[in-house]
Image (tube, rainbow, N blue to C red; front, side, top):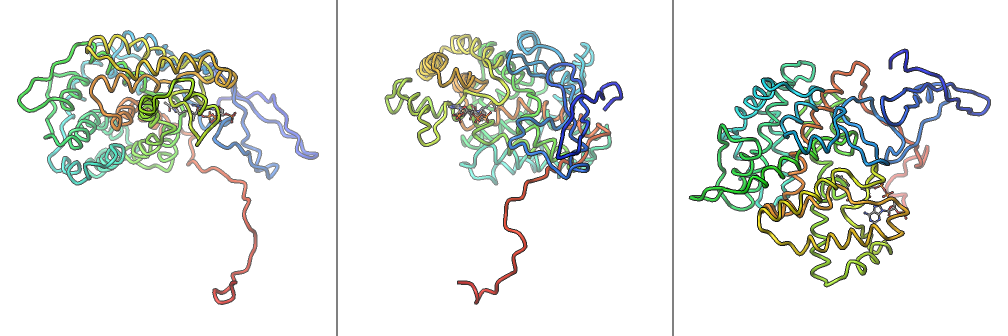
Length: 434
Ligand code: ACO
């Protein structure tokens, strides 16, 4: 905390005790209120389930204005990056804080390109895992395994080790994700090719069939790259906070990112895009109208939610959803795909946006509402949607982890609790229990 940022503006009265609480001005968004002296001076702890009001860190990476529907990476609007940048350039930006020069970008791309290969020993993990294993289980395991393969890149306090680990993760992730897909499909694993772009390599290693060329329109690659950009960071969401929390114990970057993969696998987080398609297929298969389905959602029948709607931070249209929605038509057109689920999704959105239940709760489409439809048109099965999300989110996880390990004020994450259980009971021997 800098001296200028410390302005005692909040007073908290606890009984006859008065506490001055310092605030920290943000460059944009909510001002912070430091409760650091709370426990020591009052014996109280703050209770904030789900961290709705709690900032766990200061950060310079990503800014979201949820009410205005704004998302900035290092100050640059997501709309500009999606329209003009590439995933690797955005990765550099997130990691380093500035856009690269042409020479820096070229060297970075070449370094990533060089490391995409996975050794034959490493590749065995894909045949050890059952074909029916959820891809996120294999992805987490493969990333953990990298910690065993690259011991020279483990020390969080060694910048060159961290730089190497960052490039290794970035380079090997598309290869790993493509192998997970090929193993499930029963196809041989292909090698990365030098000279192909990041997304070209990934798509070819994923989809190319024996004896055939893999050829798709440029719109395919552009859309894939854009989707990765849109997912690249989203400040302190569940998986990113998990990465930071695990990393705060000085766990290496692979173990920390793998923990992020685990968090992302949940249907309320990264699993939502898969859940959206399942929901749309359910509506189609049960011949429901959007209105009929909406009645189930509003009645909270069996906990049904409109998947792909609502967000902890956005109380407006998610700016990423707007970009995906625009892309959806272009990609489906270029690929010559007609999808009945897209029509259902559009109808659902229209009904939801004019329904009081959604309006009053400020529930709008999030990034996942239309991404699944694009991925499906590209040929990915729903079970691969969350690994694709992870591929996109990797730069954010790594940038946030790197920011934390270089922050001299960072401490091991260790929340408190309000204990509500039994107190001070005596053990009763088994034979005396009724
Ligand atoms: N469908 C129906 N009702 C909803 C939805 C939804 N998708 N989302 C929130 N609500 C309702 C809740 O039932 C609650 O209603 P109540 O006030 O009557 O109890 C109210 O809106 C507030 O919801 P919370 O769950 O408290 O909001 P929270 O911020 O905790 O949850 C979340 C955000 C998890 C994203 C939620 O909106 C949700 O479950 N959405 C569907 C899953 C989804 O799309 N997840 C992807 C998120 S984006 C991402 O991870 C990339």
